[in-house]
Figure 1 (cartoon, rainbow, N blue to C red):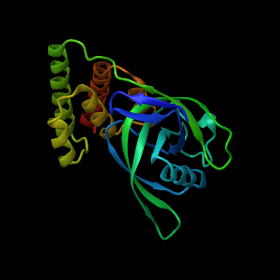
Figure 2: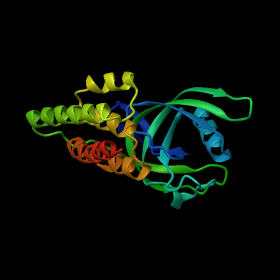
Figure 3: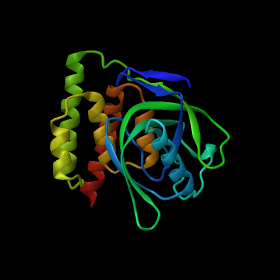
Figure 4: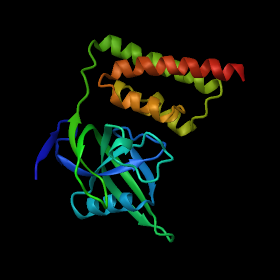
Length: 217
C-alpha cells in the first residue's frame, strides 16, 4: 500500500482511504467532530476504516438532498480524519467521533459499489509571512467576531472563550468558519484556501456582512 507523509502530524497516511460524504457540513482540520452515520455506503466506509488504520476522508456533498452521492456529488477538497470512538444506536445507525488532521484533495475514486474509496494527496498550509501582520490579522478577527457576537450572532459562550484564546491564524480561521453560520459553499471556500491570512481576511468580510444583517433585524 502506498503511504503519504503528513508534516503536520508526523504520521504516514495511506494514499487511498474510504470516504465519508457529509451532508450540510464541512470538516475542518484540527477538530473533534461528532457525526451520526446512517447511510449504507457511509456505514461501510466506517467499517473499513475500523478494520484497517481508523483513517478516512471526510468531504462535503454539493447538495445535501442527494441520498446516494456519487463521485460528481462530492467536493474535491476534504479532510483526513481518525476515528476516535464509535457507538451503535438501536435503529442501526452509528454515532462516531472523528479527530480531523490534514486537508487533502481527492484525485479520484476506485470502482467499489458498496462504499466510496478515494485516492488523495495531502494539502499543506502556506507560510503565514510577516509575524506582526499575522498578529494584527488575528487581533482584527477577534475584534470583529466580538462585535458580531454582541450584535446577536449565536455562538456558544464556551466556544467564544476558546476562540478568544486562539492566536494561531490557521486554527483561528477554521474555528471561526465552523461557527458563524456559513453555508457549505462558503465553508468549502475556506477549506480550499491554503493561506491562513487570506482565510482570515475573507472571514472578516463575511463577518461584516453578518453584522450589517443583524443590525437590520
